[in-house]
Amino acid sequence: MKIWIFMRKELLESWRNYHLLIIAAIFIVFGIEGPLMAKLTPDLLKMASTSQMTIKMPDPTSVEAWQQYFKNMTQIGIFILAVIFSGTISNEISKGTLVNLVTKGLPRYAVVIAKYVVAMLQWCLAVIIAFLINWAYTAYYFPDDKSPNIWTGMWPLLVFGLLFVAVVIFGSTLSKSNYVGFLMSVILFISLMLVNMFEKLQKYNPISLVSDNLALVKGTEKISHLYPAIWISVIAAIVILSISILILNKKKIG
Image (cartoon, rainbow, N blue to C red):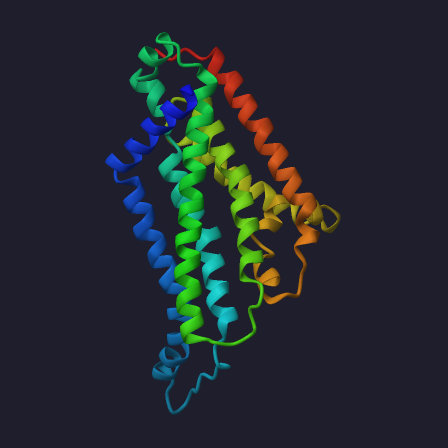
């Protein structure tokens, strides 16, 4: 019950701080951009061609639109959310706003869990908004059968958010600085990319949840090959959140 009350407070703050509107606006643009760029790129290259140099490209398909969608989500979108959530706990600690709530009986674990759930809700909202818009525009511009499994490609992206958001929350709990959460998310991403250099570890690497999506969409890979990475991401998120709760329990908040 107390977690739910604190979640309502977080959702209300997200609305008052325009976080929800900012997220919606940015990810609506991402949803439109993929199919639009896929449609316009050949024409733009034609315009850039000269009599001495002709740029030829194959006709765009739905695959190019979905490729741009996943690039936007994993190279830009997820880090925009990391910036927004980076100070979610550290800001409360530095301002001392948790003191009254904790003294009135709010458990500290409720703070971590509520903030994590609200951040995940916003991540899911962002991914799904962009996905649905991208889907609609792609179906209009490229009514082909080259992307048969679009829903299968989206789910790993949402699951990766479980781990990514947990790391941002952990960083925000660790320090009073509002930038540590974002820094931790960057370190996570770079570390997973380095781990992916070892072929034997790729099967277990959570980064595959945001790098193999296009293969899932095209049907050249089955989601079953991501099951180890999915389980590792979920377990790691639970462990990281538990550590965040332990840190906050011992932290001076006022």
